Image 1 (tube, one colour):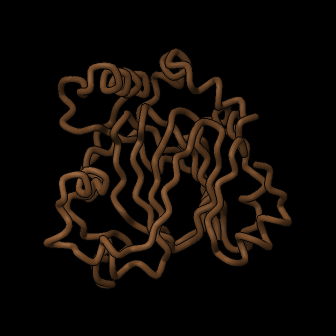
Image 2: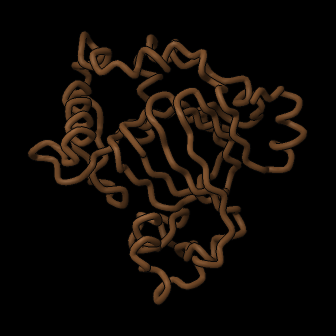
Length: 243
């Protein structure tokens, strides 16, 4: 539903409470244009190399790929339910500044008004592009986030910042201190298998909100809120981070 800038500030931003704006970015050219596989496979965009994350927890867990090859990998994962040969995992273009590097892509996904209320530092635009089944383990971000779903659908589970103990947060000395220690990291699979009752019983007491974002939907995710994310199909999202 429509949400005015004033209502957003008074009802959500000031209270640090998430909100989904259905159709909040459905007028973006990217919603239709980026859904076409051919768009990513032709010209200079398709030839461009990008870092593909193969392991969320390893700084060295990346593989350079042309965008057109990564799109073929996503398509194979979606249709055949397995990655292309040579790729051991799902593969994910995550937190990548592609829009800053390719002005035509930035024009397809203009900055939402809701992301213009930050007063500290620069606005960061980051692209997330991955095949069906891509998982981002439970973590929190140290900035505000206007998260825009452009292509495909994505499931998110949101936990208030106060739930860190029940999510078994890492210690403050850990370089990955904004991440959970839950195993398996895929919470939906872990719950289905009953994996958490013995090792992580407090997780079963944590408060959360389930959200499914479809193309054109927008989510405000306050700073410090924990979130676990899983792609329900090949998915492209753009996050606008600010303080």
